[in-house]
Image (cartoon, rainbow, N blue to C red; front, top):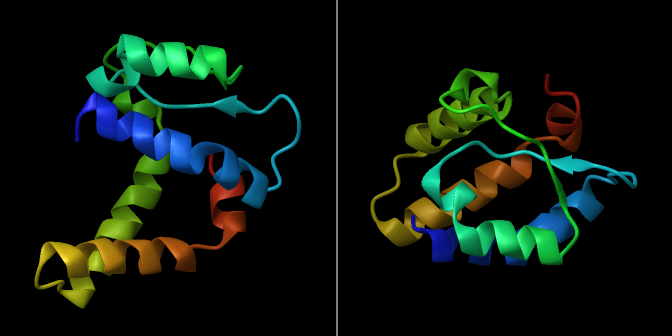
Length: 108
C-alpha cells in the first residue's frame, strides 16, 4: 500500500466509520509513524478535514491497541483460505464486518 491508496481509504472510510461507531465530538484519530501515515499529503488532508490526530512516538508499534484486532482478523481470513485477490478482499470485508463495534470501542 502506498500513500495515495492510504489516503483514498481514509477519505472513503474514516468519517463513515466514526459515525457508525457513534464517536462523540472530540474523538482523536490514531495511526502510527508508517511512512504513508506521515506523508505530507496525508497530514494535509487530515488537517484540512479538521481531524484531531494522536501524536505518536517514533518506533513504537507496540502502543497500538488495534494490533490485536488485526491479528484476529488475519486468523479469521486465513482460516477461510482465499484462493485469489478478489476472494481475499471479499473475505477481509466480511470478517471485518463481523467484528462487533463494542470490540473496537473498548480496545485499550
